[in-house]
Every structure is written in C-alpha cells, then in structure tokens.
Length: 422
Image 1 (cartoon, rainbow, N blue to C red):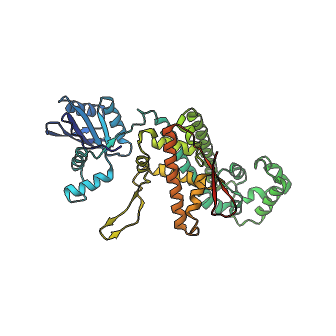
Image 2: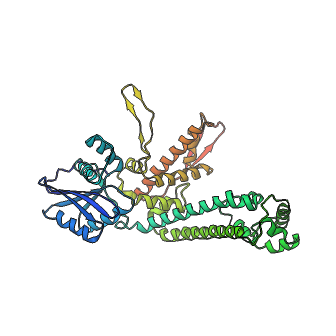
Image 3: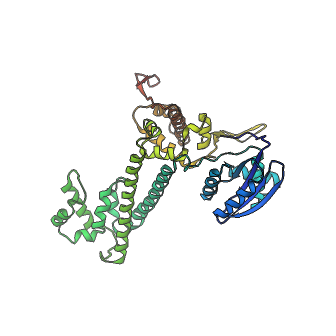
C-alpha cells in the first residue's frame, strides 16, 4: 500500500492541487527542471497538461489529495493515458506544510510544492479507481442507500419529535421499530384523534381494520386506540387545515423513502448475489446484506491488501499513542481511515454480540468479565470485536473460504469454556 522512495531516473512527477473549476499543477522532470501550470477543469486543460508532461520520454506519476469527488475525473483520464495516479494524505500534507514553511496558512502553489515533496519522499499510495476495478456500481448503491437512510431518519425524527407531539402524542407508544410500516399507513388515514372520534367506535374499527395489518387481538387493539383518542391531549386542529396537510406530506415522504430503501436492499441482493466476496462475507456472524455491501463498496478488492494490518490501517483500526521520554500515553484507535467502513464493522459487531453462540460474542464476554458494568470497558470490547471482524473479513475474502464459526459451550463453572468447531 505504501510506496518506498522511487529512485528511477526516468520519472516525471506531477503534483496537482485539485479544485472545482481549475487546478494548479507542478511538473518536475527527471532532469530536475520544474514547470508550474494552471489548468482548467476540462478536457482541454487535461490535454494541455499531458502534452507538457510528455515532452520528455519518461514515466509520468501524478499525485494529488482526495478532494470531494473532483479528483476522480482527473485521475481516470490520466490513468487512461498511461500515467500512474497516486493519492497523498491530507494529514501528511498539513504536517509537511507546517514543517516546510513553519506556518499553517496555505495557498494553491504552496500545496503543489507540498504534494511534490511527498511524492519525492515516496509518501503516497496508488489510487484505487472504482470505475476501473468495476466496483463503482456497488459504491453508488451503497452511497445511495446511505443517503436515503439519512433522509428517512431525519424525516422520522421530525415526525416523532414535532408532528406527533402536536397532533397525536399518545400514538407514539405504538411505534415499536423503524420498520413498522402499518404505523405510517394508519396515521396517513387517521392523523389526529379528531379523525378517529368523528366516527362511532364500531365504524372506526371497520374502517381501520385493514390498515393496521395482521395483528393479534386486533379488535381489542382498535377499541383501545379509540379510547385513547377520546382522552388525547393533542392540539384541536381541523383535519382539513394546512397544518394537517403538511403533516400528511411528511408521512407520505417517510413511506416513499421506506419503499426506496427496501427497493435498494433488493437491488443490492440481486446485484451482488453472484460475487464470491459477497457470499463469503455473509457467512460471518453479524454481517448481513447491507453491511456486506458497505464493506465491498468502501474496501474495493480486499485482496489488494497484502496483510491484514494494512487493511486495519485503511479502516482506521490501527493503534497509536502520544509518547515522549518519561511520558507514556495510552494507545487509542487512530481513526485515520475510512469512517463508513469502521461504522459498518461496528454495526456488525453489535449484531454478532447479540447472537447466542459465536466466537465474537465469546471475545466480548471475556473483555467484560472483570468489569462488565463499566461503559468504557464495554466500548473497548465492542471495538475489539469490530477489529476482529475486519481481520476475519480480510482473511476469508483473500483465501476465498467461508467463515468457520464456533460454539461456546459452558459446562458447570462459568470460567470453563469448551470451544468446538462446526
């Protein structure tokens, strides 16, 4: 993953400071001559820079910071021309800028010099292009699912904390989980207590019978709901008012986002079902269809990481500490990696720990054995399980094998554990 200093005498280095409309570029030829350019973010600008780079017959290596998504078009075009595209860390750029210029301020020309310095020192890594490696569709599926989920959660929070609080606060007790679709369908038809009590109880039961889906003791539930509506403390707004109309718009938006999320889940399962790494990942406890989608989308090809420590470093699961002579700091996660990947493994760890029997749950129980009431200990235990999940995921995909789980069998004393393979 990390390049060593390149001693090639036939290498042209190009440092590009990426921006939205134009890019600053610094070219360093193999003979030591340098050229500073400013190019527009267009095909003509890319071609002009490429012509300048190719004035000497040499290998071209281009380095840049990841900048939103603006760097991806640049990298793809230059890779198609035969250039080597490398990423330099934003943190490395910031530290190198302070070291070289003894100041924290920045400008485009200064940034190109900093990137060039890092390229010369070999402190860069090859750019992994999702389009070239055929993972862009997976990545876009994951990103869209993430955005739809965020929008759905915000809409839900608005409904619960604003609309229901004003128009039907007692109804919140029936909202048990975020996938209770019947709840929003019911509120869409009966948004306020007045929309319920305007009917007689028997009439309301008949009208709401098919709306709430299949439930045990449905008649008792609807009659109880009618009694709650009669004693509700909701604001007495007119059912035909603009306020209730906007309330229904929010309900419909939440229902639409829920359907979009379900459609994306089905699309992901259908699209990835034939991939070997997807099948392998789903054999791990706690890893379902969506978490496997996140792992593949954010990691790309896991086989490109030669060692699991490189993968943990990419995820931000590597340990680091601040130490100086007598002062010894405690080791903590660096978190200098892919945040969504860490989030995916954290979710998987939570799910695996809640399962009855697997090695991840056993690891968690060993961590909290001494001081299980401490929130800090539990957090460390969850993190340790997430790190183990990342190691296992890298191993099974690289070796192309399924996960072989274990049963933890407790016999007599809680300290005696027999581990048996499947």
